[in-house]
Image (cartoon, rainbow, N blue to C red):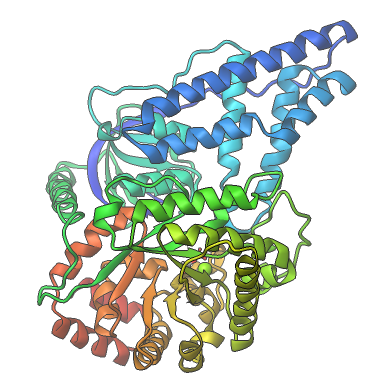
Length: 566
Ligand code: PEP
Ligand code: MG
């Protein structure tokens, strides 16, 4: 039997199933007698303390070996202390006489439901963290042991309904061959962690747990999203070979992570890293040439008050100091009606991706924008800061943003507060500005192509909507044609241009982008090794020939087929 799902991280493996069932207890709706309420309140407070202690221990044990995982538990500690939740739960116990476990369950459910309403998967999937913290609190409430801390003797293929961040973080990655789940989007935590460790993952397999058995042999092809149950001898032999190739290939790629990135003919291609948090893997100082995209919005999410100028300054300073003289491209707040800020009452919109997002949101809330710019400019003396404006659609946008930045510079000068020589650039992620790149390139110091949004706007296909996934074509001929023109315009003005959308980390697309003239790519940390390896195998001449061919092709399918065979 063959079952299928969405490929979230590539790879081919053969192994036994381990069904991972987290015992999640759903409490019964129950109410207290008046004399019981103080006991339940005290119990809630002590369970909270136990949870924080457990999270602190997990965070400390992981902080040196894996700062990214440790960050997850740091975020969970903040959730335990969330001000709104901690007003709500005691109020439900004391005023409405809800039993403590029922209050925990229900109050967290309200937050989880609210997060699910948000269209942006990067935010809605934060509900996983709240779900996780709730499970921890309830487990402690019922004095249960943690079954999640599993250590397998032999590597296994995990099959689960869903995996929460703390589950994946607690697993020993060397003992996991692949991850299969019934739920989970390609931007879910399980997918992100699987990708960052190079663990093959197939998510969204319908009724997975009713198909597989504990210890069952399965062959997983996560490149195509297929899982073969009880494979025949012939298939076993085929997968043993493919799987050996996959592991060898993954090892080989890693050897490139710390090498200088050059084409086979010796042309240097600058590699930037995309950061979405303040924790940075130590080797990025050497294996990345710059921070090509610092998604500053992570500082603003999941909190009840906006980050103050001082907090932002500390964060930006820390990143700038870490990277020394290497450029750090700080993208100003890219938030909007699709990415709600709990600390602000943002009106819902019918078409949030076409609405009040990115720089438009900042124009409507200039104080938030100016506070961020002030913090960034003050921090700029500690490194090499470049500022990048998202969701730019016209020259008016660029000029208005520059005016606001200049007004902050003027304030700082008046207050005699030093700031550095900061370059100002834009994201090219909306067709209107891509088509006006000849004009935009005269107006800015640099730009970066946001291919994720550019594709959604160019193909008119919501990047978060699985229903229109087939229309969201990153290899659409129009994408390459448009990118070619943008590259030409910026080259004419001798202005720096990079790409920081997913297309720039796709080893298939990379030769075409280089062939079109790009010399700077920025990507998630986990993609650096495979991109450097791909670059080392292709000459500029060959890349140019590939780009020329692609530009003559008619469909995304034709282009994909050609790139897979090149
Ligand atoms: C993009 O749109 O390509 C991009 C890099 O920005 P984000 O994915 O954060 O919208
Ligand atoms: Mg974008």
